[in-house]
Image (cartoon, rainbow, N blue to C red; front, side, top):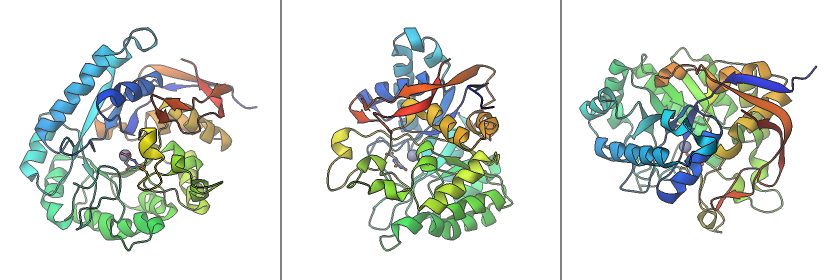
Length: 360
Ligand code: DOR
Ligand code: ZN
């Protein structure tokens, strides 16, 4: 018989973009309403505000805390005060190993986020143009991180123009990631928003302290959905969704309960004007308003609800200094109508119905 109610510990979003300014207020309350106890906060803000220095990171953290203090009472009462911010350093070519360690020791950041850019300064995704151009040049930083067990959160996608868009991830696995793991055997690594079945095999099999976050949208859509009935910017994100066999492979690792895979939404809101422009449509999918329901639906479809709790709320949380929450949340079978837009941002699957609802 199918369960109609699932109760699991409150969860933790291991990869979240909450942006800045007015947008921050809107999207942060979505994550709180979703009962997350905290999140790994991405710092790819508009240049020069990226969280690439201690000062920038502290100042962004302060802006988030102010917002959390200011949230309206009622439904969100108390949740904002307890929300754990796991800040990340936006790694550049410039920051020294000593500064990376200092920021970690002083509790400014909990992990280091690697975005890469090519020699022309073109990044592989939103706000990555000031990321690392010389990966080998960052090995002294990785060495210091290994020594202090500072997690490396990697956006592993090749950024050269001539690499096929759908191969960017797997090219980076063997060219960038593998040598890093071999050179720094004790460095904790999280492979962010994994999409390629071969990358999933690699993460699952390699003998290393390595994990992967997987988004709800990459578990649900393949590359066809970007092109159905005309171009669909709403399904365009980085890494781009892959062919169906890859989606199925990644999903199999996730819903079979492999402990190296955990929930990180990469919920990445963009204003509709930026998202729907014909040329230069921004990459990013906004899932945070219904992330728990989307993941629940996925596990349910695979008859794997017993693995939902670990994936959302347990797997490799210690890496971020988090404990499994002693509070619970409950998801119930029932119809949830997804809003089309929140604060001018198109919501993933907006206007459709989901078969699960977070109820407490
Ligand atoms: O689709 C994406 N959007 N992927 C990323 O890596 C970044 C994100 C964003 O910040 O918009
Ligand atoms: Zn991201």
